[in-house]
Image (cartoon, rainbow, N blue to C red; front, side):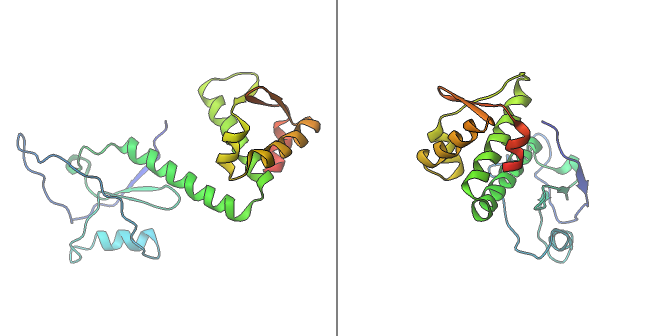
Amino acid sequence: MTLPEIRERLSPNHGSRGEPPNIRAIDMLVLHYTGMQSAAEAIDRLCDPEARVSSHYVVEEDGAIWRLVPEERRPELCVELMVVLCERLRRTNEQVEDFAFLDLEARIAKVLLRLTHDEASQSPASRLGLKISQRALGELVGGSRESVNKHLQDWKRSGIIEIEKGSILIRDLEALTELA
């Protein structure tokens, strides 16, 4: 996993967790939505000494990460965990948008493309095949197995995919991309 660039704007609003060997253990991770108009406005507030509020990191809607506490003062917070959480949040936001603005056919195509990309990044194979049931695919796209099957059968007749027991083989990646 590639970590994104972490931008830095240091805030005076943080305290000590103690000195070795008496460093207080971290017993929670707080994720908070500020409700401010922009990340810049939130960062300005978090860096204002009079505000007396703090945050170790700020994550913008686009996934950009800002570090507000110097590296040597930060808790043993796993940046990789934060990146995973950001990716999941980004994917969830994308799914909400897809449900609101895309029809079922486009959602199916988009999910198949994402799953194909994820699968290819784990094991580069010449065949673009996915082991997924139509019921599971329906759950991912918010459609019934029957509705998903109808679109898959249309795509099979068009030569875009092949359907094998328990798997879907992508035959025409370009056509599937156009559907998404």
